[in-house]
Length: 91
Image 1: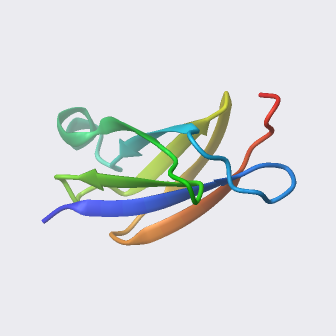
Image 2 (image 1 turned 90 degrees about the vertical axis):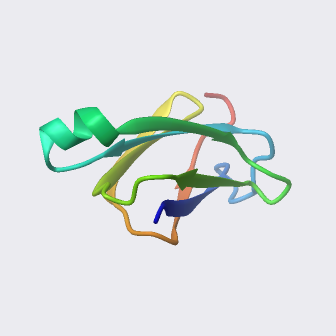
Image 3 (image 1 turned 135 degrees about the vertical axis):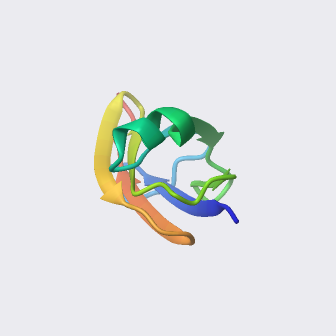
């Protein structure tokens, strides 16, 4: 079983940003497991400003998101979650 989640990227005017690169760093509370299964996923937003992520492991407890030079999180994460982040287009 895997883990999937969506990140919506909006600008300072609440408009979706198309083609934004979003990096998701997945973590577990257990440091050893984090080394073995933790990871970095990179996706770009679609025409709706959404980046869709899928991971083969579902043991992750949290995610930190990076986009346009800004960091968001950590957020607790479960399969099917959706996050919205607001970034500055000038970043």
